[in-house]
Amino acid sequence: MEFQQLLSKTRKCIDEFNLINDGDNIAIALSGGKDSISLSLALKGLQKFYPKKFNISAFCIDMGFDNIDFSNLLDFFNKNEIEIFIEKTDISKIIFDIRKETNPCSLCSKLRKGILYPLVKSKGFNKVALGHNKDDLIETLLMSLIYEGRINTFKSISYLDRTDITVIRPLLYIDEIDIKSFVKNEKIPILKSPCPVDGKTKREYVKNLMFDLDYENKGAKKSMFNACLEFLKL
Image 1 (cartoon, helix red, strand yellow):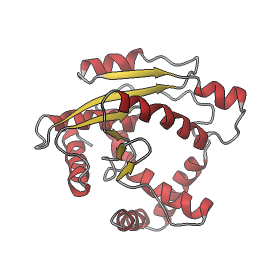
Image 2 (image 1 turned 30 degrees about the vertical axis):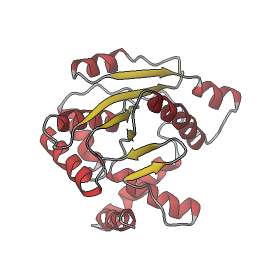
Image 3 (image 1 turned 45 degrees about the horizontal axis):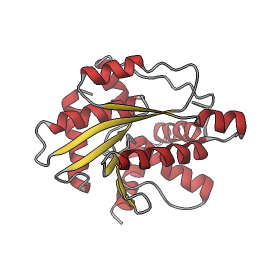
Image 4 (image 1 turned 90 degrees about the vertical axis):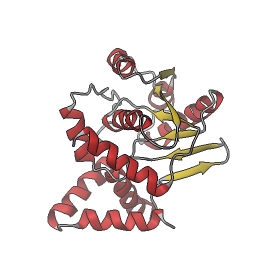
C-alpha cells in the first residue's frame, strides 16, 4: 500500500462516519506498533489539505517493561514533526508481578485507558484516535460471538460521557496486510512489544481463524466486514 492509498482510505472512513470536526484536538493512542504509527502519519498527512482543521499529538503509555527502548520512536516522530508524549506507568508490574494475571489483556486495556483518557483531557484534547483496522473490527465481532454469545463489535466513533472524550477509529477501511505492506515499503521503525503474552492471546487465535475461514470460503472476510458495517450504522 502506498501512502496516498493510506490517506484515501483513512479520509473515506473519516468522511463517512463524520469522525473529525473543525477545531478538534486529537490525541493518537500510540503503542509504537504498525497500526498506531500508520494512523499518526495518515492524520499528519490529512492535516495539510483536509477542509476541517484539527490538531494532533501522540500519547504513548509506557507499561514499565525493563527491556524497551523508545529512542527510535521518539526520533521518528520528531522527524515527522508530530508531538509525542510518553507516560511512564507500572502497569506491567501490577499485572504480571502483583496480580499474576494469566489472561491480562482486558485488565491491561482498562488500566491503559484509565491513564490515557484523563491525561489527554487534562492537556485539552477532546478526541482519542485508535489504530484499529478492518481485521480488528471483524476479529472483535468473532470474539464476541465465540466467547460472549452476542453480536457486537466496536464503533467507528463513541462518546464516553464519564471522561468527556470521543473515541474515533479512522483505519477501519484498511486491511491489516496493507498496513504491513505500507510499513515495510516505507521502512518505518516499529516498537516491538515486550509483553510476554504477545501473540498468545484469544485475539491471535481468532485472527488465525478468520484467515482460515476466508481461505476456505472465498469472500468470507468481505461478508463479515459488510456485517460489521451494518452494525456500525445502527
